[in-house]
Amino acid sequence: MPRAGLTQDRVVHEAEQMADEVGLREFTLAALAERLGVRQPSLYKHIDSMASLQRSISVRAKVELGDVLARAAVGRSGNDAIIAMSHAYRQWALRHPGRYVSAQVAPSPGDSDDEAASLAVVQIIADVLGAYKLEGDDAIDAIRVLRSSLHGFVTLESSGGFQLNVDVNRSYDRLIRGVIVALESWPRQ
Amino acid sequence: MPRAGLTQDRVVHEAEQMADEVGLREFTLAALAERLGVRQPSLYKHIDSMASLQRSISVRAKVELGDVLARAAVGRSGNDAIIAMSHAYRQWALRHPGRYVSAQVAPSPGDSDDEAASLAVVQIIADVLGAYKLEGDDAIDAIRVLRSSLHGFVTLESSGGFQLNVDVNRSYDRLIRGVIVALESWPRQ
DNA sequence: CATGTAGGCTATTATATATAGCCTTTTAGG
DNA sequence: CCTAAAAGGCTATATATAATAGCCTACATG
Image (cartoon, rainbow over all chains, first blue to last red; front, top):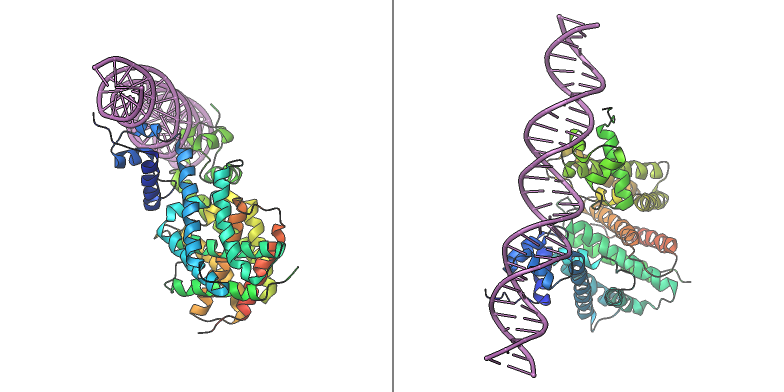
């Protein structure tokens, strides 16, 4: 019997695709195995469990999202950087709905790789906000506000929460503009 | 054999409790049945399926959230109404994490009860924004921005997305303040 | 070329939702 | 009241899921 030639990477990669296609919590190991041309128990030669596979997807999604945001912001600063990063954020989230959901799962305490990947995403956002010269808790608040706005919008959009037939792109532009306006008059200390 | 005296309402009510305790997608019919003192198949005398039970939870959650928001806003207008409604929104979401997630599930097309309940929540928000005299698409954009901000924040908070030990209440106050600042300089037409 | 290991497989287990069919309690009508 | 129908429990079972055990063979390494 010829081997399928699976690797941990190929399994996770195919699982990511399926998560984006049918949903992070809807895809099954049986369906994943079929796509990879093996029987379901064979997957366990490359993964420990469904939970560990989800965790692998999550860490990779966080790394990829961080890279995308960093690339979008490079060479820009201030409002320009926020606008570019925000558009990259939405685009990636909409194109990778399963991975985006996965990227929001908080790391298990003590999982330092996952914690690092999670932190890296927040760090990009923090860096982009650096131009506003916020310090200490003021900066933390600003990061939380920007994250909340972007995350809330793309989550609602992705789950079909915006029903009316009104241009969603314009609404997003106004959200970003609103955040910028708020940041420019951010309370200090 | 004495009867347990279940009703559709009691089943859904207990399911709501469990959803808030262990998570909307984690609670099982077997555990629900045990809490109600019956065997798992007996539940099917009162519900059609797990999906229909989830849908019942969802509709009731939307109705309850709508009521909570409406009560918070009554007798207030403008910025006061937004602040009061936003705090009620967060408080309800944090106290009812399972139901809150359920309330974000989009209705199935053609499910008019669910569609009405979903619309009602958005309508409260729209009413509260009425004081800003926004019209047409400007108003739609404002509703989407406010919803996105509140939803994003409470979702991140509820899922443990805010790691640092910095006062979350203050961050939320600043989010609301930011939205108000943005609304006061909202672009027209 | 021999051998150990890695990567497939079948068979099986445990737990989910869900259905079938039985039996008893409760309710409604004469 | 008494009886018949309906409602609400139950056991047994089917299907799908994640997961484990144990076998068998391809294949890399000495």
